[in-house]
Image: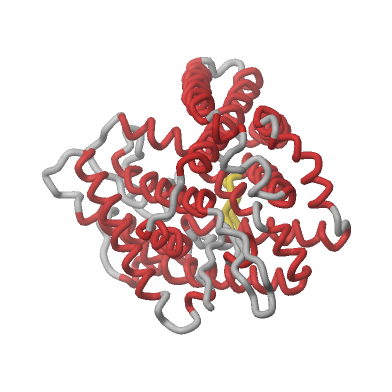
Length: 413
């Protein structure tokens, strides 16, 4: 029986688990985690779809080589803007990548135990490394060509000349894929040095199944310790880049914390722990939803105040860093609670879950080309943003569903 994978979780038989030959009992697939992973992927598409219409989007570049190079984040910039998109983008930015790294870690420990380090790394290299190379080499240049067209220049030769003169190779959202592979390598190295480290971490986190506030406090405390020192040194917007390898400088350890805590929660057991359907986290979803909105409001207020008070960078940097980690943890916990409480199997959502990884990998090309196609359309920013989002979701979904029918492809994406 073939089973679908995504980068955010290994095969279903590793965490659910579907039977292998000779095995007897099975454990039901964790619908909540699978659907939440797909939902966050949809948020990523929505985030990128509306950036062209963000009220603070920069003016189009005169050249791909012109400084500052903001086009990797804003390949296409439209004259139509809507201030409401700043709330969507800001809310997403506080938590959605952190939550993806957490979800990615949930199934690492069981997979490491079952496969051992060598087989685990070989599979992850195939499923993460190979797609990253393909996306960086093919999808990313295709996605960024509209940025070149918006400079007023034309021609593949001119684009290629500027592209190879950049000094790096922007890979777009695929940065997540190579960072996840690096985190898998960290987990594997720890497994080789300390074969029980995941179980130890799981026992330390096991109390969170009875007291979700403990899980929340651990997320805030550990991520704040990892994030605040780096944000004071590098600021929240700095990216480090070498070749096709990009990452958010101040957030890299913050993401690692979420990934490792996910490993620990997974080692402790999903069905009977924090993410149990009848657990306290699920029952108290209204409390966590309210906390997420409140924490995001506080983080936004501090961010605005920090911009207005540039003479106290360490105070506002520290306070802003703490409120960011507070909002991130609250939103992540709230979405975990909501999906654990309400997710139920649906065929349409099963299809989205199965194709979520591939959709993530290729969506950026659809985003930028749809944004470029709508530049001269007499539509509002809201209408354009919705068309780009809906078109990207549908086209990426259809394309990946078709590509995965090619023999062997579904084993990778």
